Structures are given as structure tokens and as C-alpha cells.
Image (cartoon, rainbow, N blue to C red; front, side, top):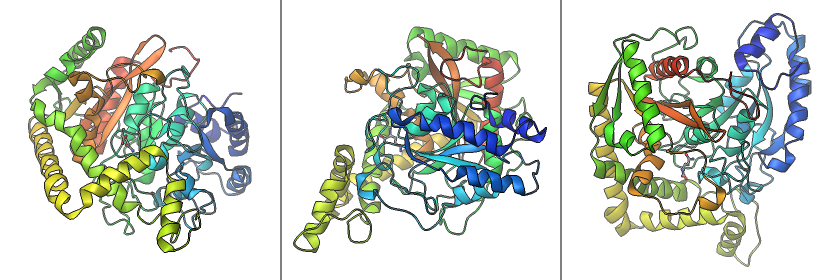
Length: 484
Ligand code: GLN
């Protein structure tokens, strides 16, 4: 029997009915992971997983939904005793002495971690070409990008190798690759899942979330991993629970909305799909309305994101200096050690971001640039709040096309394309939950649709996606398998 293509729900059914065991599943999936060496999607294989599976079986098998379910974790999440390098040479050989909270919570839920997945170095990038482990390409078409930064995680879920994977999302690193790989990607409210043990990129924007192949599976994972954590100062309590149980109980009075010029900016065929989707929502009794978003403010999202995230990344990664952390490269004195270590340890994209970030953090430049950027972020957040006073669910396109060709990624974009390329960042700026699900297909590749709700309304976000999943009728997609 093939287990790799099954969802969490489907694997759970088999386990519950005694049709298989955690060991059997883990063995098959570990073998498939081993075959993936060429893809560069995996940084580390957890060979211990088979022993862990046996131990699970010795315990009383319980009926919890995640019992015996295997998964992959992005390699910027700390795992006790298991190398964690965030796809950066500077962290090669680093073995954390503790588990991130998300890892301990998944362990408590009796899941099995199969591997650590590659990313754009330290979470910086959206392409999958910046991992120190080598480039990762789209599993549907290797001439195209897989997206990122959660590249390896998206790849393994899309390819049907794991039922779910942990990703992180600072700008769109879960939700954009979900669109490019025809899978589901969810970033919860800021603080809903503890960031303790996450190697930070930009702490005011960073969130941990998941890739799955359907919306129900995301709900199962939220139930297991949400919660206040005193070890993360930005952790919050979400006053919602039983996501899985309540996934279908959305109220028909909830209002969907969209920004007209954003939808109008899409290529014709895709635009029509959006309008026909809005009509289907209306037929089901939901109101779908237009909302306003000043264009100059949407055009500011990308530069504001760069100013804030690059500055935070320079500051937060200052500990990677070869003295406190990092693969040391010797030098004549203390400063030379730092310089040589950082020079050898970081890739070009990371260096670029640190350079710009450090300039921004310079005292005069902070006043000139960074503080201005923070003020504009505030305006963007206020605009989002205004939208959520009028409607409950904002629909945005996670991207305007299928995954771009690798050879096209440096091509200049039109103003419209620029707006859509970075629109998902809105939800990082204000801390909203946001989910991408498969929407349509072109040339055998997927294109997703995204839903954003106000901060702390994660259940509604998932419910809205579930309504859409039912209307669209696409789920559990895997490379090489036909639509259901
Ligand atoms: N595309 C964004 C970037 O390049 C996404 C990064 C992220 O969310 N980690 O920074």
C-alpha cells in the first residue's frame, strides 16, 4: 500500500482501524526521502525515526489524530540533538540542545519527524535558489522555481512524500510556495504558534505555520500547536479551539471582500475565475463586496517590508559571528575572526540584506528611513483594520500566474505584477491569519487563492478556506496524479 500520497486524515483512519502501523508508514516515507537527495530539498534525514516509531507502538496506541503521523520540519526550527543550519554555511555543524516549542508540541501529539527541509538561507528569499545545500526546483517542472523560503517543505508536500510540513512565513514564505506547488499553506495570527526555537529572520513579522494538501489537515495541526508559551514574549492566546470540529460551522452572515483593481490586474482567464468564484459564494448566500485600499499604500508594502525585515535581520543575526555561534574561520584578532567567519558563512542574498539593514540601523538613517517605514507600516495596518470593520474575509491572489521559469525571475515587473507579487505581506504587517489553497490549473501547474481574516480569527480563516475548497473542488493534489 502507498502511504505517501495520503493526507493526515486518511493516514489516521488506517492507523485507527489497525490497517497499518506508524513503523510501516515511517519506513516507506523515509525510503522516499532517501531518494530525494538529488532535489536538494532535504538537509537532514532523521534515521532515528524508525526507533521512535517502534517506541510509539509500545505505548498504548491512542486515537489522537496525529498519532504516528510523519512530517518534515523546515531547517530553521531548532531540534534537540539534530543538526539545524537554516541552509546557511555559518550554521553547519550546529546541533541545538533543545527543541523548539512547535517540535515539542508535535512530539507530545505523537507525530514522527522524518527530516529537516532546505530553505532560502535563514528564510531570506522567495525562490528556493538560495539554500547552501543547492538549488531546489519546482516538483511539477524543474525549469520553474519552487518558491520559498520554505522551499523543501513545499516540495515534499507537493510531491506526496509527507502529509504535512512545518514552514515559516515572514513575508509569504508559506503561502506563495503553496500557490506555486498546488498545495495548502497556512500562516496563523502572529504569536498564535510559539516562535521559541525558531532561528529568526525578522521577529516582528515571523510566524510558524504549515503546508498540507487539504484544509481539514491544517485544522488538526492548529488544534495541536496553538497556545500561549511563556518562553516567547510575543506569544498570544487565541480564544478559539476545536478547529477541526468546527471547521464546517461558518455563519452565512460572514462577508467576503476583495480589492477591485487587484483582481482587475490579473490576466483575463484568472480574473474570470475570480469573478465566477465570487458568484458561487453569492449563490451560497454569502455577501461578496469590494473594499478600498489606496494604491500608493499597496505599492509601499514591498519597500516597507524590505526596510523593516532587512533591518531586523541584520540585528537579530548579529550573534552569528564565529565567537558566540557559527562555524568559525580564524583571523589575527577578534574583529578579523568575525569578518572572516561572516564573509565565508553567508551567501550573497543574506549579505545584501544585512548590508541594507545595517545602513538603516545607523542612527541618522534610522530617523530618515526605518522610522518612516514603520510609520507607513502603521498606515497599512490601519487600512487592514478598516477593511475588517466592513467585511470578515479578504480574498487576494497569492500570485498572478503559475510558478515562474527560473530564467525569468530577474525580469522587470509591471506595477500591477509588483503589487500582486507582494500582497501576501499585508498579513505579516498586521499579524492576520492567512491561508492559500489550490484554485485553478494552467499548463499542468497550480495557481492558488488566498484568504485573510482579522488577527486572532484563525478559525474563521480556516472555515472560509473550507467553504472555498468545497466550491473549487480541488484537494489532496500530488505531482503526477490527476485531479480527482
Ligand atoms: N519573499 C520574501 C522574502 O524574500 C519571503 C521571505 C519569508 O517569508 N521568509 O523575504
